[in-house]
Amino acid sequence: MGQPHILVAESEYLIAMEAERLLRDLLPCEVTIVNPASAAACAGIPWGEVTLALLDTGFRLDARRAFAERVRQGGIPVVFTTANAAYMRGVPGFPETPVLGKPFDAARFAEVIRPLLAAGITE
Image 1: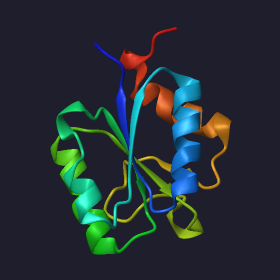
Image 2 (image 1 turned 90 degrees about the horizontal axis):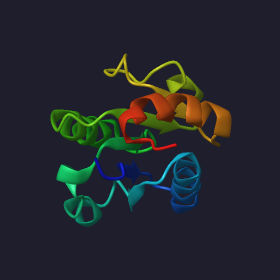
Image 3 (image 1 turned 90 degrees about the vertical axis):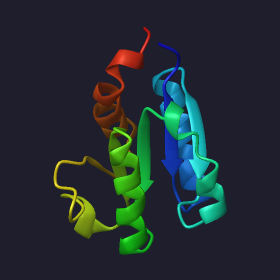
Image 4 (image 1 turned 135 degrees about the vertical axis):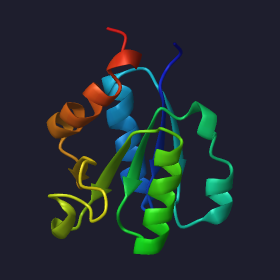
């Protein structure tokens, strides 16, 4: 298996870059950053290569739901990211999906991400 390919769908580019840094600190991986509100950016997502998606909760509920469902239909695990305290215990409609708070805590980030990518991690 090659390197994991992680999709970071985040409306704030600096936060997306921080997620990318934390991911690369954890393991060798490819990272694609998109703004989930941009249809043009999302059109270029290499869906067949994505092994995990980090999805920002900070955009419209209907758009977030559609995007998350598209990812899950492809069998891709989803981790939500949020700065909204109401979502820290879970995102409505996605009770089993992990949530990472923003700003990211590196230890919690690793705790959530590592098991999801265990098959792709090379020590």
